[in-house]
Length: 126
Image (cartoon, rainbow, N blue to C red):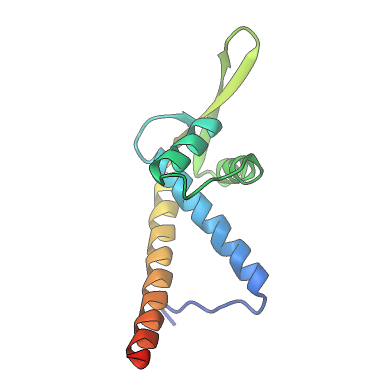
């Protein structure tokens, strides 16, 4: 069935999967601007652009970056920052652009389904 989203048996599992996919989508969308960014910079951008609505803690940011890199969606390059400190700058890879398009498509499907349910509920209440 094309375009059908099946809700997982476990609400916690579904929530975690949705959250992980959403964080991936947000990170990839910011890296899609064809320049390099480091983890803390991405976290700050997300918080600033969303007017402090979205805050991605380090505990979610860095594991997501590592996973995206492991799957070949992004590439990280370590650079010296100061005398001893290193910072990893990430950039989008072609496979990452494909992943972003898929995540956006899935997100819009879920969003559309939720909107249809909310509209139906509102119509019944009226």
